[in-house]
Each structure stands twice: as structure tokens, then as C-alpha cells.
Image (cartoon, rainbow, N blue to C red):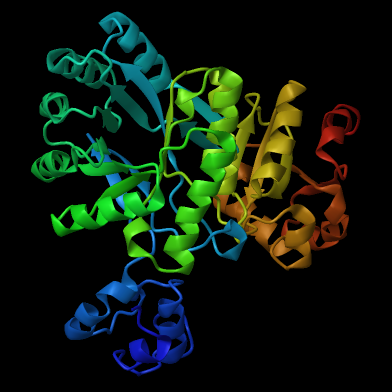
Length: 446
């Protein structure tokens, strides 16, 4: 039985030091009991109490990490069903699958294209996370060769797919020293697969088409010392996948049912066509896969999936931001104007894209407004004349321009007088309210 908040409180220091960010130890205990905080947040828990609270401190969904040559993919540690309740922490890994009956040149070409694929999105580089190698030939040597071919082309983490322990062993030897995911243990092979997982320090996927069978397998594997487990509920259809994966997540979070408290793996790549694969992958990102195996590498499919994943797994309480500083657009010269805005990513890209697309050179000064948009930041006191003047001085933009002209967003024209006092040597202009009107303003007024 999980500990209650009062039981946890009795094991805490009871100093009400607030180092955990909460006003009292009782409040911390209640949060810990609800799986809304981690025990490590309290720096004063005694070793004896840590031992007793180990189960209460364990997240409802275990963290599983795949590692390879400096790259890693993490899944788990989630504490809520819906991102607006708190946030989702570890976005699902997207893997591209190859099979060992494909020619080595075809494997290398597919892996190479996917490995270098990068999407630039609101200042972030979005990429795929790894590759899955599946045994289709039934030959251990061919499987090992396919794994080696992938590894020669990419250093990203791997998922190895084979039901035969002898074939799996050959693949694992080809990447000895890494931490891949083994797929999969079932009712017939779980004992041998557990031995391989333990020997190679690998995570182990568990497959069964009923939840009680899945829970039974994870319980058996845990008694053998295998803790890093991943669940495959063996559903491939859209509706069934949604129901089964939601049931697993609810049982882990709401019922604290430990045998199903692990990340989920999904196989949209088993779909018959690209459209269905895209739909299954999008659903898996939202509900609630931790590892997603795609069969096709198609930029027109991968791009929206990467963007969807990024949008879902950002902190809903923290806006997406860009780095404050001075940005150069279209190779500006000393005679070109300085445009100023906040570091809210959408604001930055709206301004930058309009000016760059029009072929106009400008210096773009991004002020730290804690990720808020122009009007929101101004209303909250985070975008004012003092902050703008500070950014001007810190970036040294005055040394880069011959004509000191700075353009304020039209929505905060009220700041122009205050900014003239802060920057008496500058010509303060008020620009348009909308970024789309900037090119015409720059051509006609500046």
C-alpha cells in the first residue's frame, strides 16, 4: 500500500525550511504522496528516511534511458495524464526501422538520410532519436551485420527487434557496451530475454495482448532484477491503441499499479500506408507512447510529428523563448535601423521572417521579457524603457551603427518618451503594431 501524506510527514525533518519550495514539510509530504514532487527536492531527508520512503518517492512511470555514444533517449517519469495539470517531462523517442533482409547499401542510405535530418523550429533543432533494427531473415549473422551497418552510419540509440534469444544475442554483441532496448520478452521467451538484458545492461520490452498478462510478465521480470522495462500492449489499430495505452497510464498514475508503471512502445510503422502511419504516430505522441517506431522515413511525415511532439512536451506554464541578444538580419550595415521586440519565440520569428523575407537589412534587438509577448510583457512590467536601454548597452549595438535609430513595436508607443530619457543619443521611432507591416514601414519611413 502506498504511504499517505501523514505517514510520509512523520519521516520528514519537520523543519519547515522551505528549501523544497513549499511553505511546510506537511505540504511537501502531501505533494510527495500525490506523486507531484520528488524526494530529492528535500535536501534534509535522513538516509534512513530515504530508505523507508523509496517506494513513495518512486515515480509512477519508471524512467528508462537508452544510451549510445553520447546520445540518449529518456522516457518515463511522467506524473500526470494531461499536460495542463503540470507538464510532460520526457518526450517520446522517434525511431526509424530497418530490417536485416534489406541490402546493406539500402540500410545505410535510409539511416544516413534520417540521421542528418534536422528541422529548425522556433530557434530549436528538432531531430529523430534513433533506429530500430528488426530480424526478418531469422539469421543471427545477418541480424548482427544489419546492426553493425546501422551503427557504422549513425551513433544514435538503438532498438533491437527479435523474438529469438539467439538472434538477439548476436545483435547485442555487435553493440556491446551500449544501452539499447531489447524487443521483446513474451510468455515463451521472457526468461532467456531477461538474462540477455541483465548481461548487456539493456532495457527490455515486454509484449502481451492482455493487460493482466503484461502485468504478470513485468512482475516476473522484476523478481529477476530487471527494472528497466517497456510495455507493448500488442495493439496496432487506432481505437484499440488509444484505449489500451490510456488504461495503462491511468492504472499507473491513478491506481499506483506498479506492474504497469513503465513507458509504452508503439509501432505505427506496422500500418499499411503512410497516411495511417502518420495518424497512429500522432496519436502515440499524444497518448501515451514513450518510444515510437516508424517504418518509413518521409520528411513530409516526420516534420509535423516533430513539431507536434515539441508543442505537447513544452511546459505549458513557460512560454517558448529565444535567447535575448542582438541578431543580424540580411547582413546589416552601420546605417541600418535597430528593431526591438521581446524574446517570445513567436514574436521573434514573426518579426525576423517578415524583415528577412522582404530582403531588408536590420539589427534585431531581443529583450529578455521572460518569454512574454510584447503587450503581455509590457502589462506585466517586463518590457519597459529601462530593460530596453539595458539591452542596448549590454549588446554594444551603439558601436555597430552609425545612425542611432531604434524602432519600438507600435503596441507600446507609450514607452517612446521614457526611452528617450534612457537613451538621449538615440532617435526613437514607433513602428507598426503588426510584424506584417514592418517591410512597408521600413521602406517608407526609415
